Length: 274
Length: 288
Image 1 (cartoon, each protein chain N blue to C red):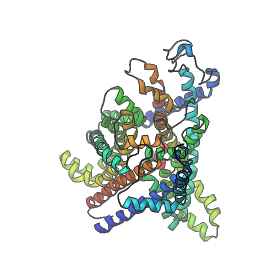
Image 2: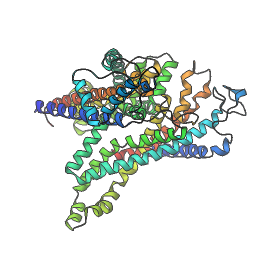
Image 3: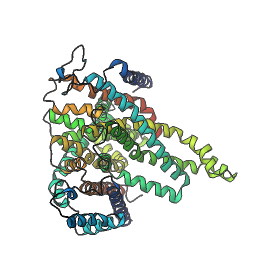
């Protein structure tokens, strides 16, 4: 893809993301009745002027649930990404900078986590927590878990980058000039790790959105009645044919659109992280 | 050198499994509700029976002793009993592993075939249409969670292995395409093409020896991705494999079963990665 064309698509992706985030933040105004209100006389209804995307099987407005679910997924995935990037900076960045047994220890811990398939690790850790928790707690548990477990790949990259910075001339010169280790890390190493940290942060967001969707569909994510993309996609489970209720595919289309937009925006960041 | 490499992998694998086991035992022991046993609420039990149940729980309080006992049993081939299903874990795994292995195997075969065909076509033909087609297809599937692919496969009556293949394919394609494009742009291959060597000869004599070790490493990683995807696929397609077992164990908070499955899966992925590394080492002619 030529540079001009890829920049064009990147701009389109940015606009899409801003639009989706903006609309989801305006959920309180666009769907003032909220995501949990039941319209029992119209349970399982097709789209109408009142309910743009119809209602679910217990009569909740699907449009409202999509808006609120999008907001939850799009606000908490970056929070989880921030947590995982911080952990990666501590484990990988510090380990790589200190070198020797610290780097080996950090890498051994990273390898241990990386040897487990991601979804296996997630469902194992999720099962360790009580499953019948309040909806708000389930949201926090799900995204906290993603943040606490998703640092491994980033830590590996940061460990390698910090390791090469440790051996660089300017760090050696600063060390020879008697700059203390903590100051050296804070003033000289950390600013040079920033591009990798930013890249890892942005790359983690779509990965966490997809992981939450997987957990939600499996019934191990955000608890009812709180909506999230995972719980909204769970509705596809009862479908008999695509043409029967196509509006049920809106959360999936939105998810693909948002993750694709992230992928397009991040194509440059991935080069930095590699 | 080869034996040293294999031995190093063996030691690393053993250490990871032992450490992973300890971590799992610690997590199981510290999980909320570990000290609670529903059997204690059974009105048919007398005070002495309840006391002995509590005593049995108390013996498991020390994480290291708890792990040591579990390890001793595991060496004898006893992985404990599933709390939710009431059957020995070894029996459950023996019954369900073949299906998961078959599912993951077919899925991997399909995904590798499609990914390599598209990646080779893009690099071989140097056609931007081919490249764009591969990028769009893989980009679309990259944005769909494995669970949604499983649901769609149920909706359209497609085999579960296809859902696994569609989940693994984009991850393989992206890496393989970039790798092959890089190798095909190397000066010696451009020269070989200019001299009129056939594409097949270039592929087998000049491309595979360079890209082979990295593709083998990717093969090791793809096993892990396929096994991970097996959980939602088996759970949502109603296939009685290890993935479905893990999902049921998670929903029932059957921690002994879940941790045993996790360790088993870790072992399989480590074996696949080690095998890929050793084969890559052989392909490089014994160079580290």
